[in-house]
Image (cartoon, rainbow, N blue to C red; front, side):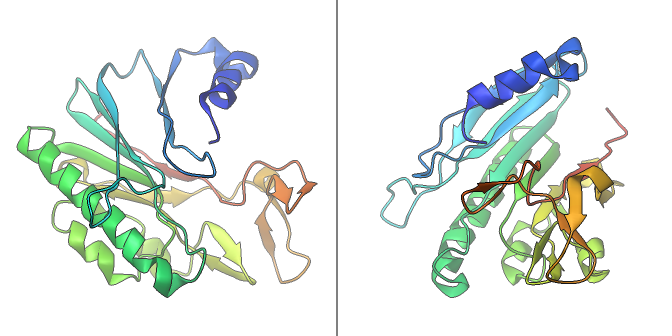
Length: 226
């Protein structure tokens, strides 16, 4: 999201205003003003702690990208919201930045485990597919629920006519069994005029306003213990 105002409006003027949703948001150092945020229902979850977790370069300075948002709840659930550095400028050039993000995520997950927070869910846009071996760094602390869908050729974005899976859930063993789903709901899709099938109905195409929700399909997980 761009800012907290957008999400506050969502909570105030849409039908979910009738429910008890709360917002967790922090401004990130991203130069394009892109942030990550979390909405949760206060009647289901009691927030214990929330903070932004910076990514750091090798010289210990803060990387100008999205932080990882950490939210801990009093039932032992810890949520880590991610939006890892993109492939802008080239996949190879940007690869070290995403590795830093994955290493930071592993450090946070291990720290949470050490503190007794066993139920860990990491989610978000990782800007890479499960095929990247860098995600092995998260094992065995976290399991990638996107791998089975990736092997089936499923995806959350469409690039050059092919579906790619870059939005994922990683969970700790205590959250298993859990299954990730991709929601390809008709009103979130549009005809792919350049290729076969459909694609996500995005908000903008360059400067042109289209009016869709996102160029990503939503992902969903059901944690039964909640």
